[in-house]
Amino acid sequence: MAMPSAKWSRFGTSIFSVMTMAAMRNGSINLAQGFPNFDGPDAIKDAAIAAIRGNSNQYAHSHGIPKLRELLANRMNKVSKLEYNSENEVTVFSGATEALFCAFQAFINPGDEVITFAPFFDCYPAGAFSAGAKLVEVQLCIPDWTFTANDLESRWTPSTKAILVNTPHNPTGRVFTKSEMEIIANFAIKHDLLVITDEVYEELVYDDLPFTRMATLPGMRERTVVISSTAKTFSLTGWKIGYTFAPPELTRELRSVHQFTVFCAATPLQVGICAALELSDNYYKTLRLDYQERRDFLCAGLHKLGFKFHKPEGTYFVVADYSHLSKLPDTEFTLQLIETKKVALIPTSVFYTNPRDTAAGQHYVRFAFCKDLGTLKAGLDNLA
View 1 (cartoon, rainbow, N blue to C red):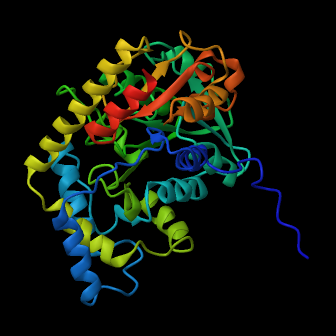
View 2 (view 1 turned 45 degrees about the vertical axis):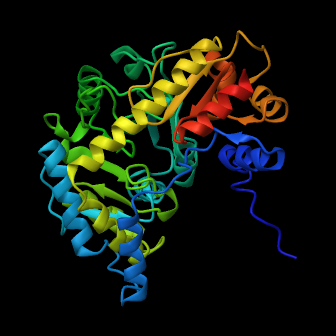
């Protein structure tokens, strides 16, 4: 009998799957995994259903159906004034995670180092590992989750090839300021680095805060791969329609990997997302207001329970300090909550490569507020 490869055994099962399965076993309220407990507009689903019943069920163009790429380019231009050619600078992927994997494969060589900010989404280390690279973390400073130019410079080595920037930031909810983005841009230019930006929460920025895109800063468009997704924007996380914006020479490399990974995203779902991108601007305004209400509701409840946190400026997560309740390590604490309080959360130590080296990785947990208000209230009631 052939033995399985041990190469990926270090990663095991994703913490999101672990906590969701534990929540289901215990009948707990799932405030752990970041997926809404509601769907996006029916008009989007109807368009995909019509595509399935019609003739949009075969392979799409590997780069994405032309109409979708054009609509994505138009949306980017509308919100950022950035112009991308839909023919050779926009690519559709099977989710932002696949796009990130393809970026690692396309641009990162064995022995290279990629800098990113910790805490970070847990697929980043796996992407770096897949390319034989080392993920180097710059730990955001608690309690406000900030960083300095010196923090970046201290992590640079001659092996540094790229920097991966996630804003709006999962899990902390930070939206990096323009001055912070300029620090990163100057660092990238100084050391001639590729910049990969994870912008999947781009439409979930609250209180009318400005969102600075890396590619809009001087000298950055030509060295930036923008990765985003329709999942969070349209509450259809299971559809896995992601995309990139990048200059032609970088796009060519991304597409070379993509065609041998999944070849193309699901054709009828791409048609459905075309309908999503044709919604009026009022959809995005309502989306932000609804999520802002959920954020404020959860934050008010957590404050009453004694949790300490930086109020998120974007995304749909709150990272909170639970040290007033327990000195247990975060994974043990979250498992205990599932059993005793019937609430599932995410331990933040999984968002660091060296969680023992930081207090943030030990007594902080992540709450997801991408749930209806009734579910959030029930979760707070259980915790109380």
